[in-house]
Amino acid sequence: MPEHTEHQIARRKADHIRISLEENVDFPHLTTGLEHYHFQHTALPELNLDDIDTSLTLFGRKLRAPVLISSMTGGEVGGQRLNRTLAEAAQAAGIAMGLGSQRAAIQHEELANTFKVRDVAPDILLLANVGAVQLNYGFDTEHYRQAVEMAEADALILHFNALQEAVQPEGDINFAGLLAKVERLCKTIGVPVIAKEVGWGFSQKDAKQLADAGVAAIDVAGAGGTSWSQVESHRINIPYMAEAARTFADWGIPTAESIIQCKAGAPQLPLIASGGLRSGLDIAKCIALGAMMGGMAGPFLKAAARSVEETINVARRFEREIRVAMFMTGSANLTELQKTPLLRI
Ligand SMILES: Cc1cc2nc3c(=O)[nH]c(=O)nc-3n(C[C@H](O)[C@H](O)[C@H](O)COP(=O)(O)O)c2cc1C
Image (cartoon, rainbow, N blue to C red):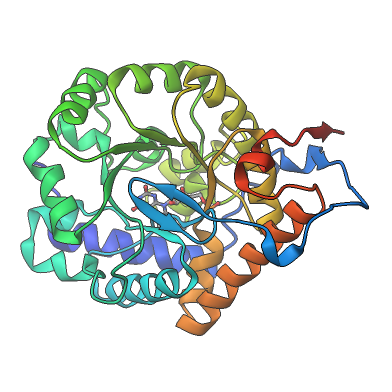
């Protein structure tokens, strides 16, 4: 079993939230690549804006708009409040939500409350979250199932954060032999498993290997938004390790490129786009590149730190922007938006 204490994990999660809210943790230079893609404008949409259908169904849950609040928090007191704020907003806006890593709550049952949001969000697509690397540190299918059950989630996000672990002095750095364990987990857990990066993207080869291992969907979580090596560099108190983390501040596969690569590597799987998306127009572009929906962490975190109402308004803004992009490309539904060509400039 991993040797990190409840206190260490909770403090690390609280540090991540504080640093993400207070410091500039964007990639210094690298962007999502979405700025190179543009829709062809049509002056003749031949649609009523109000009739456009932005809904989709995934893992048995209907979403009003193709938007996911990406995994962020839980496992400490502030995290509980944030999760409940995010969940209330997701329920009101009809969007999906991912929980932050539940590892601490699997090891320390008393933290499970910080991930319980079903009472305020009975209808949302809710995704549990645990790191894949824990399969090499004593976790088996039962531990991952516990995460799904404590949250009453519809599916499990298995996050792959090799670079984040590699730059931390206390990181879990043994990623050897993980794929075979992921395959066993997918076969035995009984809910869909979504493979998710945390901001450096998956390659075509990664996507094919994950599809072959049996994952049900991929969240690309590409580069260009929140840079975890930047977040970690603010937290690490060993100067040479902090410097090494900063060296990788611009590492990763930009989100647009990762979507294209994952589509090629796993054409049959639903793709979630995330990593640096900052508007509904960004999400619309990702859908035209082959994704099914778009996720965001940073923008929802900032709104949730203020209020439920602000968080709902952020979701409403994204839904409106997706709807307008669909209108201006003559797309009556998300299937048509997926077929809309993008100009690369
Ligand atoms: C404060 C914070 C905490 C995060 N915690 C997790 C986590 O526990 N599990 C996970 O899979 N991703 C986690 N992430 C990564 C996000 O889900 C997302 O993949 C990444 O931040 C890129 O999205 P963004 O550019 O919209 O912020 C976290 C991100 C932030 C900002």
